[in-house]
Length: 83
Image 1 (cartoon, helix red, strand yellow):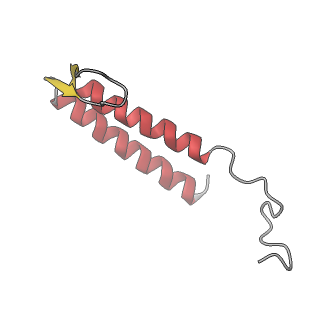
Image 2 (spheres, one colour; image 1 turned 45 degrees about the horizontal axis):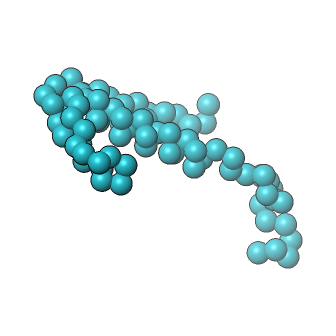
């Protein structure tokens, strides 16, 4: 496992810990407003909103990182004359 992969894993686990820590200590109800998709306020426990936002962020990051590479110079730097 490379250092970069290990660092990404540690950052991900730290963020997951923060989300879980917030969820444990915020059990009250919270209002969530998102006028583009919801016509009215959604009321849910705060931990569910925090976890939902975290899950959406993780999913978006996974989608953005998926499918990278595959160009002409895959893993070999730039071909001569194409800089």
